[in-house]
Image (tube, protein in one colour):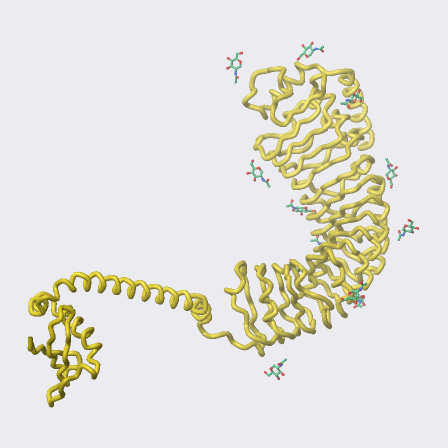
Length: 522
Ligand SMILES: *[C@@H]1O[C@H](CO)[C@@H](O)[C@H](O)[C@H]1NC(C)=O
Ligand SMILES: *[C@@H]1O[C@H](CO)[C@@H](O)[C@H](O)[C@H]1NC(C)=O
Ligand SMILES: *[C@@H]1O[C@H](CO)[C@@H](O)[C@H](O)[C@H]1NC(C)=O
Ligand SMILES: *[C@@H]1O[C@H](CO)[C@@H](O)[C@H](O)[C@H]1NC(C)=O
Ligand SMILES: *[C@@H]1O[C@H](CO)[C@@H](O)[C@H](O)[C@H]1NC(C)=O
Ligand SMILES: *[C@@H]1O[C@H](CO)[C@@H](O)[C@H](O)[C@H]1NC(C)=O
Ligand SMILES: *[C@@H]1O[C@H](CO)[C@@H](O)[C@H](O)[C@H]1NC(C)=O
Ligand SMILES: *[C@@H]1O[C@H](CO)[C@@H](O)[C@H](O)[C@H]1NC(C)=O
Ligand SMILES: *[C@@H]1O[C@H](CO)[C@@H](O)[C@H](O)[C@H]1NC(C)=O
Ligand SMILES: *[C@@H]1O[C@H](CO)[C@@H](O)[C@H](O)[C@H]1NC(C)=O
Ligand SMILES: *[C@@H]1O[C@H](CO)[C@@H](O)[C@H](O)[C@H]1NC(C)=O
Ligand SMILES: *[C@@H]1O[C@H](CO)[C@@H](O)[C@H](O)[C@H]1NC(C)=O
């Protein structure tokens, strides 16, 4: 019965598509576009729709592309009359708030090569008529609310190269008919509820470059056969329930750039063959049950910049220089060995917490790009690190390392003093020089007119005692003994010859070092 219905539907669509196949009706296309109300600024029927946002036409003026994204179209796909667009090749309505199901009428778009409906709220079963879209190469239905088993009808779309059903609510096992899609290069099914074993036959999709099955409910072991996917560059299987070891043959997935097997129940030791993946940029094996040592040549993978081996039971040292990674997470293992940091250091994220590592952490001072640094619960030695030494650091934990020596209680003032003290001293010196210079000038300016005023010491004293005092100091060369003409119990008497030629006797009292009484002897 079901087969009969779909057969009838297919015949119907065949007839419908034949009706429009020989050319198009411009006014029909215009009417259909206006009727959607997706271009409210073009509410009048007009023939210049080829210039509207998101629309492309062929030379004859018939619509070939409709591509809108991030627009709230507040409707469903049913508002587009598919029968009016016999030449449509690309239909994309991404993140357009579309609801409801994909209408059967979509099967009329027999020239379609790309259908992108990701990030809407589409639901229901996929229409049977989708199998009509035999030219489809790209089908993106991710980020909707589709559910049920993997839509087997899709496996008739044998020209598909790029299929994404991620972020929906599909469940059940993957159908073996997927192997029909021999042209697939990109397959993304993450964040669904698919279960069962990872199929051995996935290796038949031999052109796969990207395979993402993460965040599902797959169980069982990693199939050895995946090693045959030699074009694979990205393999994401994290957050499933996979068990057993990594097949050593995975070392022959030669083009692999990124491998994520994290958050599964994989065990045994990490095979040395993984170090044959010379193009690897990113490796995440975190949160599994791996034990044994880290393959000794892992540090030789010269492109590897992201490495996560956290939350396993790995033992022994890591061979190589940690500082050439950008992100390194070894946390929660039983790793030992000395910290090896060299200059230059690219580390932005370093988590070595909960291990048994040793060595002086002061070598990390060259890692000035660090944003996250967790060294806690190890056996590191040396002086503690100061957060202020790392301009970008947002997180620092070096606790529970018994042998770290504390830094000074208030390290920052100390730190700043070493910088600012010379500056402050320099400034003081400059101020001093300035003051002296100014004073010197001032004395000179004062002394110059005095040489004229010296005519009458008494009048000078009357006006400015200090000036006269200075003159006496000069005349006696600061009370040099050679000017001393007598000493009594009260003080000493000096002879002072002032610039005007007059000679005076000066009495310097003992009790007040600088106090001078003047005895005019003319
Ligand atoms: C195009 O469609 C209009 C209706 O919108 C119709 O009146 C007209 O006859 C059609 N033209 C052709 C050539 O089919
Ligand atoms: C549609 O066209 C009519 C006349 O041709 C004009 O009065 C009206 O303003 C137009 N509406 C819009 C939305 O452009
Ligand atoms: C979806 O489109 C809305 C505008 O309609 C925009 O604000 C939002 O950022 C878009 N979401 C994504 C994930 O691009
Ligand atoms: C659409 O397909 C028909 C035949 O199915 C063909 O005549 C027409 O040229 C195609 N248009 C494009 C743009 O490929
Ligand atoms: C997903 O599908 C399961 C049945 O497979 C159903 O119980 C669950 O409610 C669905 N979740 C959502 C968010 O639709
Ligand atoms: C798809 O695969 C199934 C089983 O693997 C097979 O029966 C069917 O003929 C294939 N369909 C096409 C179009 O190749
Ligand atoms: C995952 O699959 C197992 C069977 O392999 C099943 O028992 C379990 O309920 C599934 N979990 C979810 C969340 O669907
Ligand atoms: C890998 O491919 C070769 C041929 O390319 C084939 O002989 C072998 O059986 C395949 N291995 C697996 C495990 O699929
Ligand atoms: C790995 O786990 C499986 C069960 O998932 C167990 O049978 C096997 O012995 C374990 N292997 C190792 C080396 O721990
Ligand atoms: C490493 O993997 C674990 C487990 O998946 C995760 O919690 C952690 O955030 C990852 N670390 C980094 C730096 O991504
Ligand atoms: C890896 O590097 C070490 C030196 O760090 C070297 O002794 C070893 O031969 C290298 N291995 C390979 C496979 O290049
Ligand atoms: C660390 O300190 C403990 C005592 O607290 C001492 O026994 C141990 O030898 C020290 N380790 C190192 C590497 O200095």
